[in-house]
Amino acid sequence: MRSTMHDVARVAGVSIKTVSNVINDHPHVSTQVRDRVRSAILELDYRPNLSARGLRSGKTGVIGLAVPALRESYFAELADSVIRAAEKRGLSVLIGQTNGDRAKELEAVKGVRLQGTDGLLLSPARLGQRDVDALDVPLPLVLLGERIFGGPTDHVTMHNVTSAQAAVEHLLARGRSRIAVIGAPEPLAEDPSSATLRLQGYRKALAAAGIQERPELICVTGPWGREAGATAVRRLVHDRVTFDAVFALNDTLGLGALRALGETGLSVPDDVAVIGFDNIDEARFSVPSLSSVDPGRESIAEMAVQMLVERIREKGDRRPPRLSKPDFHIVTRESSGPAPS
Image (cartoon, rainbow, N blue to C red):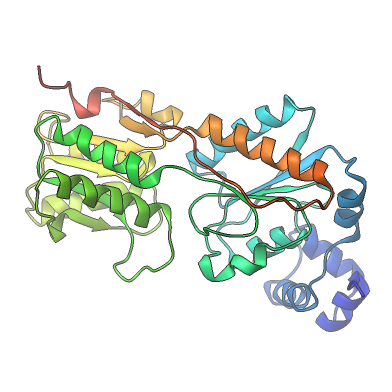
């Protein structure tokens, strides 16, 4: 039998009201109690009744979008694109932020978060290839991103390897040969990710050009952001590493790199050419403006919403999972300089 909220409360040793507060993310619950309730939810495989009713009826007209962090420009702009794609189909979007927390991502998949939705678009940051079976749920689900491949759900992702290769080739065509890559993963990282795939593209471009990879030009960072990009450039300069270009694995890293290059007196693009990835709106307004890979964010949103709508309409008729990747293109701006004449 399906577990109930009473079961969760009993296992966690709390009241039903407390379980409801945790599910609805009310702030006035201690971390210890919140963890106990979440553990009970996962242990019992509990799915809220509201979500189940919405799944059966298909009449809520609401879909969910779960992303790691809305403060990250790419995810904020992706959410905007998803909302507009949904509105064209007469749907509303309920957005949840997982903060890159594995338990919250699992809760989203199980329908515990974003209750009352007919289906879910999920962009995980912590779930990995070992969690592929966790995606086999009755809730219509479309996966976004690069963390899990070959799963039981539809999946919309990017041409990460080939587009990263194109970004590096863009710099090579401008006569750059000592290209630093910022945002690389830890050397022992095993799960696929944006970082591992884009680093593959970087390496492929260098190999195709006959350029030897230099370990000192591969900059491992923590979470991708402006400060991480700036810190990486400052480290390169401090260590007296010679470089004439930067490939930042996302645009916020690239914006931080631009700031640090200016601080250290290096001219962009004369001394160092820079290209980022994601083509966020802010890239157009930096000084100099940031060249970037446009991975097709609008198309990703359109594809994902359409796939989810189709799965909701199927009502249990399971077709094989589909994988889609939109086209990408390089957006040339001031930071990478003009092509040689």
